[in-house]
Image (cartoon, rainbow, N blue to C red):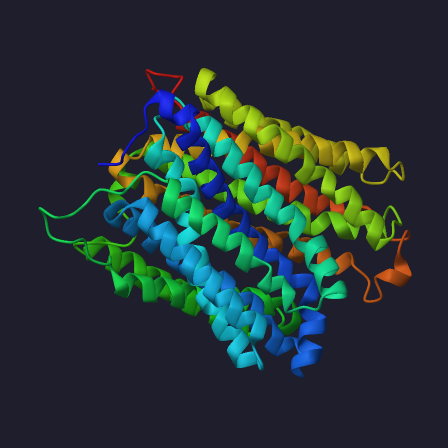
Amino acid sequence: MAPILSETAASGRTGRMILIGAGCAAFMNILDGTIVTVSLPTMMHDLSVDTALGIAVLLAYTIMLAGTVLMFGRMADRWGMRRVMIAGFLLFVASSLVCGLAPSLPVLVLGRLIQGIGGGMLSATSLGAIGYYFSSASRGTGIGIISAASALGATLGSPLGGIISETLGWRWIFLVNIPVGLLALWIVTCRFPPDPEYSTEPRPKVPDLSGVLLSIATLTTFLIVLSRGSETGWFSPVILGGFLLAAILLCVFLIHESRCSDPLLDLDLFHDPRFCLANLANVCTSMMVGGFLFLMPFYLILVSGLSQAATGGILLLFSGVYILVSPVTGRLSDRIGNRVLTTGGMALAVLALAFAAATAGSSALVIPIAFLILMGIAYGTYLSPNNRQILHLAPDEKQGTASGIIRFFFYIGQPIGVVLVEAVIRPGIPPDMLAAAGRVDPGVFQAGLLVCCALAALSAGCSFFAGRNKKDQTSA
């Protein structure tokens, strides 16, 4: 059983150390998914490779992160949250050193693959630790803090990558992980409660390696097809064949999981319709956020006529507001439950997106600023209660598994949302985008915003019905 802390310990030094360690895991895991993007051109120039090969640096981390997070969630339930998190920090620090010293692209990609495995461990345990150590009465507060740490990593990734690359060189975007990772490793090793021992029962085994390989193959195919679709053409034989192959691999994976005696994806959890609906809401919201964050830079530059620097500054409003709101709503969910917050958050997103679509032709800068603030409030209101609900619906001994499922659906939702919105707005985007700044028809973006609005509405509906028939509304 998970070593649930008493309310006194949860609010004391031990609880704070768990939140710091898990927060570092969430921050580093998300940061390294975004910090590389800005540095990629310099990186590719120094290693003498083109962008087509350089994209492997991004995909290697994403694929291994998403492909292993389910397995490490299961392993955390069996081996102990602390053990898996320690292994994650060790791998992350070691792989960061490999990436920072990489003499060639193959070595860098290898380092990123290993870093993605470490990231999968940290991703599964950063959120899983809250369900593992804290009771349901105090999980919302912890989840809010972890969500804020993740948002901080996403917010700082691009600007921090640019600053470090310009001042110290691109290798330091990896090397800075080492002191932070070692500090977090010390906290987890010395300050976390010990995991259960297995002296009286068989030592737990690694779950379903065949499922891991199938999930990685599915994600690799899917993400490569997504990354090449715009360039090759979405209806070209190669892209359609790639989607068909990904669909076949997904079917094989699900059939394998349904027949496996020890599956990677615990399908028993999905027998509860509330669990299914809460996770469907998670996917829809992830798609919505990925889509509108992809769309907004184009809108601000091409319609509002802003510079790239000003656009980056305005976009920080979304993450900044979300970081402030998320811990508050996490604590609030411990008191009033999840349903009102998750449904209300997405209802606010629907209104904000509809407002943005209706006023897309306006040149007033106050409109996108107000929109991003509203979206930050909406997403911050929704996310922590949604994650809390999913963890609450899973047994205590499956908190790591539930955490892995949350992260898995989050990782696959965002790129799908980007593709949906890109397909809608691409016909109206001129080839020479910067030359057309300020003169693009705003109607191009209305359709993309309405797609995101529909996704938010679907998430709101799923969130509402996910909380039905729950006797204890303070825990659901």
